[in-house]
Amino acid sequence: MVKCEYTEICAFFNEGMPDRPAIANMMKKKYCARNPSACARYMILKTVGKDRVPVDLVPNDGDMAQSIIAEG
Ligand code: SF4
Image 1 (cartoon, protein in one colour):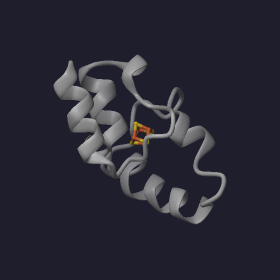
Image 2: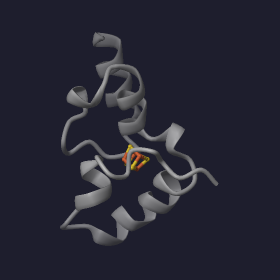
Image 3: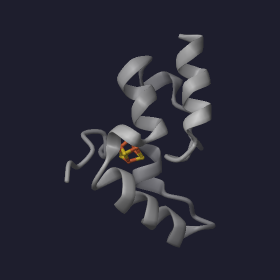
C-alpha cells in the first residue's frame, strides 16, 4: 500500500466526482490509497507536470494520459 504523494494538490482527490461519489470513492481506494502509479493523473504529474492535468481527468483514463504525455 502506497498512498499517493499528490493528494493535497489533486482536484480529483479533493473534489471527487460530485455526480458519482460512489465511483469516485472506489477509485480513491484503488488508485490514491493503493496504486497511484497506475493513475492517469499521477502519470501526467510525474512526467509533464501539474499544469497539464485536465481538471476532469479520471484516474482510469490511461489513454488520455498517454496522449498528453506523448505531446510532451
Ligand atoms: S487521483 Fe491519482 S494523482 Fe490524484 S491523488 Fe489519486 S492517485 Fe494521486
